[in-house]
Image: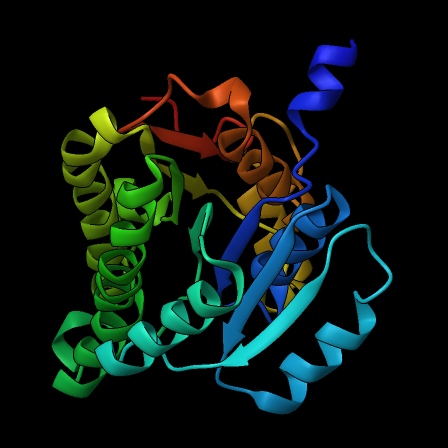
Length: 254
C-alpha cells in the first residue's frame, strides 16, 4: 500500500496544464497540485485564471497561472521557456486546451474549421515541440493529450472537432515512437460524456437519451478524467506509451 501511495507523491514534479481555467482542465490542475506537483496552467481569460490560482493556493503543491494563447507558436514557446527559466525542467505536459465551433458540414465556415484546428491540434504541436527538448535533456517526461470519444466514433455537427481530436491520437502515437527511448511517454485520454456546464443545460429527455447509451448509466465527472491523468503521470504507468485510455463508462468499447 505504501508503494502505491508513494507512486502518487508528485512532490518536486513540475507540470503544465493547457486550458486549465475551467472544467476538466481545472480539475486536473487541482488534482496534480493536491499530489504535491508545482502546477503551471494557461488560458486566455486572465481574470478567470487569477481566480483559479487564488482558489487553489492552499493545496499541497503550488499553482501558477500564465496567460497564453497556445494556438500561437511564439506564445507557446514563451510559455514553456518561462517555466524552464523558473524551474529548470518540465516533467508533465497535459495538452488539454480545446474549443468547439459546432456546425453541420454543409454550413460550416472555413473560419470554424480553422479556429478549432488551431487550438485543438496545432496547440498540441506548439506546446509539445517546445516542451520535448528539455524533457529529452533530462531523459524523462510524461506527455498526456486530451482527445474525445468523438475523435474515435465521430459525431454529426462536429466534423472539425472530431477531426482535431482524431489528429491528436495520431500525433501522440507518432511521438511515442520517437521518444520512448528517452524515457518519455506519450498517451491520450479520450473522455466520453462528462458533466460540464454544457451538459447541465441539456433537457431531461436529451440526458436520458444519452444515458441510455452508457452502460455505467451515469455521466462522467471531471474528477474521473483528472484521476486518469494522475495515473498516466505516475511511475505506475512508466511502461505505458502510445495508448488511448478511454474514460467513457462503456459508451464505446473497441
